[in-house]
Image 1 (cartoon, one colour):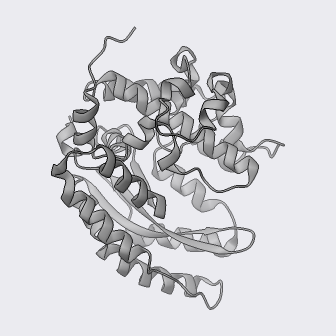
Image 2 (cartoon, helix red, strand yellow):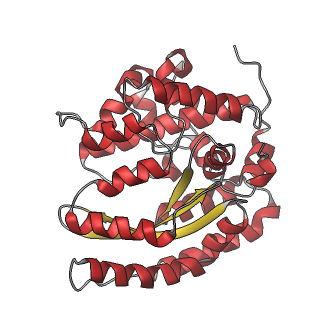
Image 3 (tube, one colour):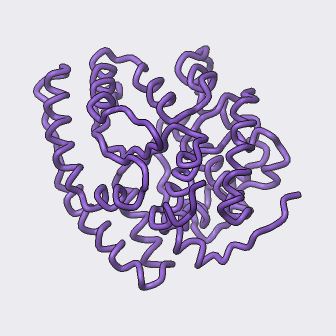
Length: 317
């Protein structure tokens, strides 16, 4: 049985995801390293964390300084050129103090790989850190599948990632192979719970706003339990995702205060809702530093979050 002490120094949104991996409910979890990843954590630590996480802040600052200097020039869109660029990127990513920190703070297998995304106008690169439990593929296998999918311009890597993360197969199929309609699969995923969202509150983009103000009575609808992972888009009618979510919810409440677990599911849903809205508007992803308070706070290390919020265990109704 895992313990919160196993992941207490990870960012809370990642630590809770990682607990579901350690207790065997999922194959893997991951986080995408971006500018906002560094910025949101630094801001949350500056504003809310105790002084004993100064070392954490220094790690983030040093990493962002390196991150801001990374660039890639692709001569051509071929597997050979992408593979060579991936190799160079990974040499840099592995030396990032943040990546080394995450590896040290997770008891399972943790590694970073470059991640390529193809848009209509360009190919972008990023970094993704994976957290695996008992078994994991080799990092080069993930890179190879990503590179091949980019060159062939298909969604095979998206499918592979869904399977890596242990998402229900039907939800992976829904997201990659579902019928193309007017609405995006992201929007259809959150549609059953749209009436729970206060659009005016979300549009305030103010971290003083509580998640309770942004989404109300979420757990009255069973579909709420389908949002058991960060940036996961469950099928709108998927009973398997809901039942897996209930199992994960129950296992997490054995390790964490129940109101923190509830906030985790609420934040997952609200963030997915905003991501779906950004897809529909063809705009960039929302800024985590201007979202609801609980999401902002979940960028704190888990130990600091639990101590600051003084979450109390509640009896589930």
